[in-house]
Length: 219
Image (cartoon, rainbow, N blue to C red):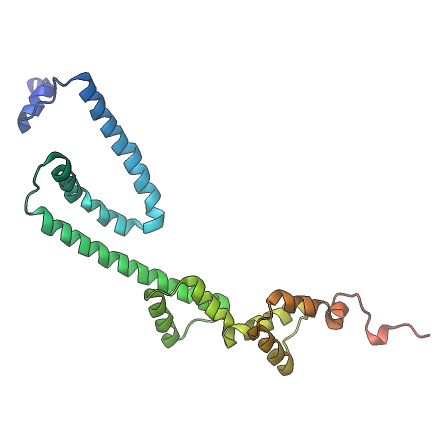
């Protein structure tokens, strides 16, 4: 055992037929820089990428290390990679594309569910959910989806009801609902609607600035 423990570094290199010692100082420095940079920079970038792309696609992408190293060696050092690298790289690429596509659909599904809940106050129906997931998959942005939801009749109705509930502590009457839905559809902003309602007598009475008719003092 003692003799095995006494192996020199040079002896270990002999197992692969390559020397592990006898390099110039500059070469040793370059090897150290490569090792440190790969550990510090490489692992730091991987850790930073996990929250962005997810652990699964990142783990799969790491498999490109071997075909990537073979490509670098071919371009820079003229070392032709073995034929087995090409189908292996293609297989990893296909797998990565499938994983990214599946994760993208899962994120779109979660966004559509959240958008219906936040903007309409309900869960999506099956047909609407499938439709909007398909729109996101085909290039519609999330901002465009949110704007479309807000501009829809359901979105305008919900916003009018919310503003009435917040500022007048009641649901809108049918004529008021239709009026303000039409104003929002024609371009009136929510801020303008709130300003108009909060400047009215009903809001002032609720805020205590205008007394009730019965509470007015007699002359």
